[in-house]
Amino acid sequence: MMMPVMDGVATVRVLRKLNPDLPIIAASGLSANGHTAKVAGLGVKHFLPKPYTAETLLRTLKEALAGVVAEG
Image (cartoon, rainbow, N blue to C red):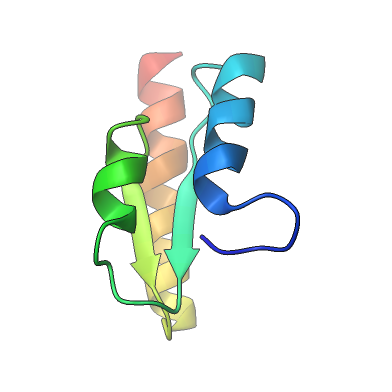
């Protein structure tokens, strides 16, 4: 959620303008103090708090991509 130049919330906004249906998985090492609510309001359905395992990442990717297939 925090990056140089553009933070995660701004990045999600830009990506949503380019493709409103793009599945986005947000990840942050910070506590979910408000970031989760902000990105959820932008349509982000998946949030991974760091550290996460490879298994958690793969499961989340599967869920995100399954939503694309189901909607498509």
